[in-house]
Length: 206
Image 1 (spheres, helix red, strand yellow):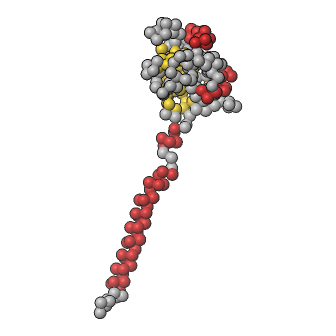
Image 2: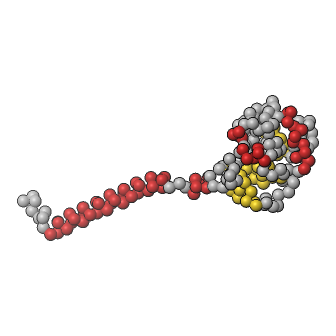
Image 3: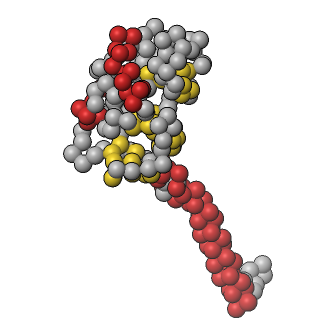
């Protein structure tokens, strides 16, 4: 008969083997299919670091020098301004679009409370996001006080060659340029005199 031998010990054993093998292969396949989803549930190392604070030692920073860090994919400029630059900043108010930094989105409130015109926690140290507020280009730092082709009364600052926007050494935007707002000051604080932490407000800061 056609079914002769189907239930004999050899065929029964073979049937159990094939059933078990099919189950294992199915389980392995399901495991491979699940891996991409499981990985997607866990944030990547890059994603974990994206919002992490950045700590820097600024003890070696000299007058006129700029340190560039990266925080949340943005360049962060830390600049030590000279006394001549600091003295020149108040005289620029009449040429600026927002000299008092009235746009609250451009800097933390505690920065303005510390130094409204300088936009910094320490007078000599400026901390800015190095992206032009027009189209996100990277302005050039031109810190010397001297006439420039784009400004005969230049007192130091940042010049964006893409569309000619200009900012002073506090990151305040000039009038009659494409950039609509001042450069952004990121959240930050000082862990000690020589250590700056980007991305974290000072304790009690708002």
